Structures are given as structure tokens and as C-alpha cells.
Image 1 (spheres, rainbow, N blue to C red):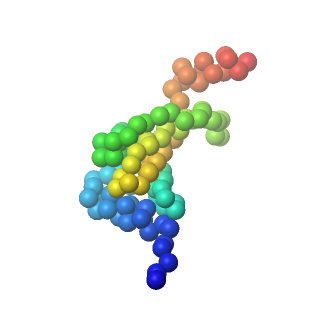
Image 2: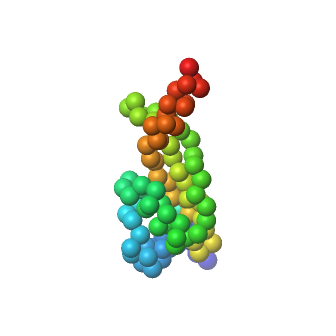
Image 3: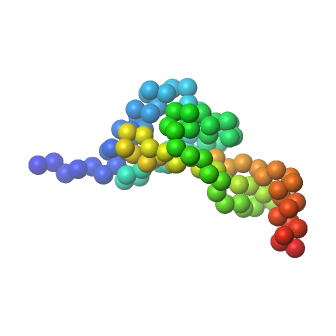
Amino acid sequence: MTTPIPQLGAALALVQLLQENPELPVASWSVGEFALHGHLHEGGFGALGRYAGVLGGSIRPGSDFLLDGRALRSHRLAAMWRDIPVHVDVVLPMPERTVAAHSVVAA
């Protein structure tokens, strides 16, 4: 009797996703026990949209935060691929008008 390998299903799903869609933007991936988590470092919202075009799912804004004095917002695509949950995140600068509105509210 063999012992199941918890991450194997998610790892195989990632290999299949990348083999079948080599045009997808490069992402950093982590393989969880039952899920895949990707982080886009280039390409912005357009790159996230390319993943959504392949995976389906929905893109939702995440939290706003400051980093080195810059206002940023995360965005997450939540989808399924071969019965494996997939989250792909991108962090983008917030538009100046949004930053100004937050500053007024915070004051």
C-alpha cells in the first residue's frame, strides 16, 4: 500500500496548466496541499486577465496598503483548474485620485 502524497495533485495540475498554456505570463508559484498560489511580478492587470481567460473564475480587489510610501492594492483571481483551487495575485499601484480620497478620509 502506498502513502498518498498530499501536494501531488496540485503539482500535477500546475504542470498541466503550464504545458497546455505556454503563452501565460511568468508567475512565481507555491504548491499547497490542495491549492495553487501564483504571484505575478510583471504585466499588471493585463497579465492577470490572461490567466482569467484560461482559468475562468473571478478577479476581486484585495486590501490596500502602503509600501515605501506608495499606495498599493492587491487583486486576486480565484478559479479552479482540474478540480484544484487556483489563486493568482498581482499588486498594483493605486490611482492617484484613489490615494487622495483615502488621504482625505484618513485625516
